[in-house]
Image (cartoon, rainbow, N blue to C red):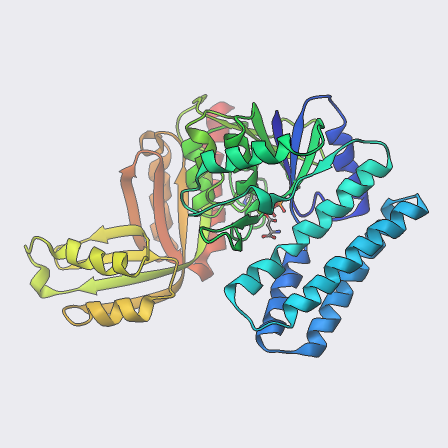
Amino acid sequence: MKVLKFGGTSVGSVENLNKVREILTADQENKIVVCSAMSGVTDQLVRLVENIKFDDAEAITRNLHQLESKHSDVIDELIEDQETRNALKDGLSTMITEMFEIASQEYSEIINSRIITYGETILTYIFSGFLTSIGIHNVLLDAKEFMHVDSIENPNIEKVGTRLNNVIENSEQASLYITQGFVCRNEKEQISHLKRGGSDYTSTIIGAALNASEVQIWTDIDGLHNNDPRYVDETRPISHLTYNEAAELAYFGAKILHPQTVSPVVGKDIPVLLKNTFAPDAPGTVISNKTYQKGLKAISAKDGITAIKIKSNRMLMAHGYLRRIFEVFDNYHTSIDMITTSEIAISLTIDDTSNLDKIVKEIETYAEVTVDQDHSIICIVGESVINDKNSYKLFEILNFIPVRMVSYGGSNNNISILVDTKDKIPTLRFLNEKLFQAQVEAVV
Ligand code: ADP
Ligand code: ASP
Ligand code: MG
């Protein structure tokens, strides 16, 4: 059994849905297919949630009518048979009615989750109906029946496996199953979600739960590139990455992968392939436990970072001081990404600022605290990157860009610097030229 995940652009138009169909029918292997919502739909649902929060009935109606007509147009274009078309439109309209009902309730976290996961529910319903209408036998599975994730950081894979096997056993037998990415149930069995971009994570949770032979993540680019293609020209795909490398890159901002994508499959050694829906023959990237090449592989950037400097003369030689500081962050469930220390000060970074005020207030009782927002962590990643003979060139950046923090040697596989977000793009471009140009020259 393989798991194949198709992202927003891959399912974002009738033309692309037909490309997905071709990929699914290219071989006879058993498959579970995880689909995202059509591109732009989850963003629209996030806006709908805002309308619900502000009780804006007119905007809610407008938004839901737009959503219905977008998907209704897809049904019209995709499905030839009139009867199937009508049946699918009836189903769509039932879902829109349900959404109106949910939208009329008072805002809560559960309302948020119920609304923003509808994009996946609607798309899989239409896609499954389309495949059936052209004679491709498939069974639609409701992810809410098996994707129980008590803790997003640490999902109970065994529980998902037991429930999913149960759902499969009790449904019609098929070699092709379709289900929704992103949606899950939480520890209270309430509808929840795996955070933005979470369909990647759904696919590896399912892959691990069923001991799949591999997980394929199909998107709009031919694998993970050595730098962010949105900001840097001449990036190139990387053919192989280790789980560690992929995890570092995903965590530190490579948008192609949800930050937790690889964690469920690492222990089971299930390979993850990143493939391009629009160039299915391109090799893409294979993520596994094999190291094909050591040294620098890729650069990524994570935005929305807040740097906090904590300074105190009392820190001088005082043991237990760091523990005292870390305890404050721990008490507010705020994780720390980068840390540097001097004898009288410590600088660290966080990305979740929801408890920042309380943290600062508490630490200010015994130290001076300075907070700098809007920073980006730029990471260079590769097995043993700290031993790569070109890595020193990273530090030439100091000639051009003010660097707020540096983290070197925390792991052998990652060197990170912290810069103001306004300097992110020049930094990525500079590093691309310095570090990868050197690689190209070495090969020539
Ligand atoms: P999907 O909707 O299929 O999940 P995403 O938009 O989440 O797709 O991820 C694919 C996008 O990630 C690419 O179009 C690309 O712009 C962006 N991206 C950012 N960093 C990288 C990288 N290092 N390699 C490849 N793509 C990247
Ligand atoms: N549709 C969700 C999002 O846009 C999940 C995903 O695409 O992975 O974040
Ligand atoms: Mg994505």
